[in-house]
Amino acid sequence: MAQHEQVRVAVIGSGFGGLGAAVRLRREGITDFVVLERAGSVGGTWRDNSYPGCACDVPSHLYSFSFAPNPDWPRTFSGQEHIRAYLEHVADVFGLRPHLRFDSEVKRMTWDPEKLRWDIETASGSLSADVVVSATGPLSDPKIPEIPGLDTFPGKVFHSARWDHDYDLRGKRVAMVGTGASAIQIVPAIQPEVGRLTLFQRTPPWVMPRVDRAISAGERRLHRALPFTTQARRGFLWGIRELQVQAFTKRPDELGLIESLAKRNMGRAIKDPALRARLTPDYRIGCKRILLSSTYYPALAQPNVDVVASGLSEIRGSTLVAADGSTAEADAIVFGTGFHVTDMPIAERVVGADGRTLAETWKDGMEALRGAAAAGFPNWMTIIGPNTGLGNSSMILMIESQLNYMADYLRQLRVLGGRAALDARPAAVAAWNHKVQERMKRTVWNTGGCTSWYLDANGRNTTIWPGTTTEFRRATQRVDLAEYEVVRPALADGADGADGADGADGADRAHGAESGAEAVA
Image (cartoon, rainbow, N blue to C red; front, side):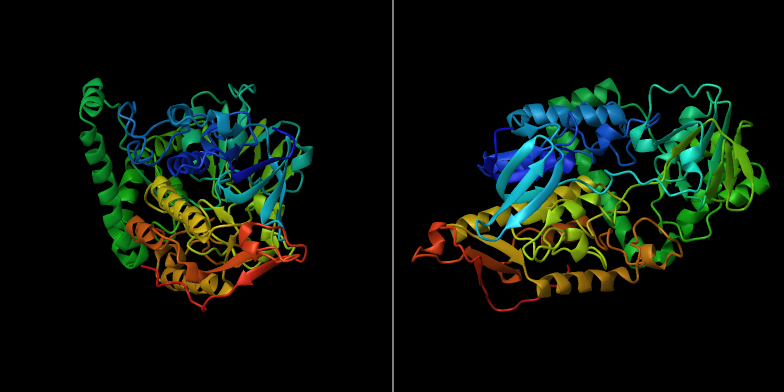
């Protein structure tokens, strides 16, 4: 990286959000930008998660950019290696390589109120940017629970997102901690080769069959020859999921039929009544993410697998002690315990206009205007921000909506002219989030009777969007300047702030009429 490089836009992260932002910037005619990536290659969570069996639970043709369709997906649900290859392909096809800065983890970024720019310190040097687009993603920093005795465990310990491929699990006694989306893929992948597998399950998930198959060569030829067939396939997959949203957000009682199908799926593989009882959730389906697998239950029924219906509470040497007092011996522990979602570490490194970090601003819960802008952090936007997650569809749809918002944000700055920044009004942020939380009250994620990673430490759902992807796209198609304060450089020595002079006394804020966020569609 050049010594204290100055750019128009700095994008943080090179997963789907970061690469999508880079493509959109180029399409908007902006080439003065960098993509800061802490690792040595692109891919984000699809680079970091390389555990056995890793695959997507959203159909391939929906889990890809609309502007970069892939007619050659090999399976209806793609594996990690295919998705990562797709992202590498996007970086190449759209000419993003010159903008990528690898091994450049952001250590700190601080808003300079006089120069109206972000000063960014990275592992490879420092730079400044007029605008920051944070695309670090919520599934990027693994969470390992604090368990007494873990530091004295004599065997191997790793998180599913940091898989140790050099460690041979064959014949080993392996403990799998957690029963989320990663665990239900890992368990059937490693069960045939380990000596004994002990699954520590705090809460059983609802699991539906994963209707996966190879996409034939004829289908792929058709998609290459007639691109509209790829679009039609994507549109069908999207439409089905849009129709499902009402049950999740307004009528959770209608999910009872899905529960009966999930129980029938379990019953086909789990014949032992006692094991079936341990694996049956006591909350409404959909409260936690519905997981897809046709191999998870058959693996749990194998003689070398033990299911402990309790969380791991203590470790004594190689003996693992569950909360119910039961014990198991292990040579290795694999944590499938999720990520720092509502307490993202990047928030500790972002220092806003008033000198507070984003983490301090969000200490009572994450809030962002239209999932993108936080009050007190001018010219800073996040992709996959608060309340933009989905419980049943593709996050790529949400990312593309946020890219629309980002593009209009930058257009508004150009229209304003000169040195300018936009800072979300606290009243607009509060109004937007009030409406989101009001809608959240009747959703299955809040009423389904479970505790999930969707909820923060205060029990508030700050991760999920309580509506359709169509509604979100409407809500983010343009920037309403009434929801922002326009920040200009302070006048100094008769200089015209509109001409970009750096004032010595901070920045002036142009206060328009107060306006709450427009109604959540």
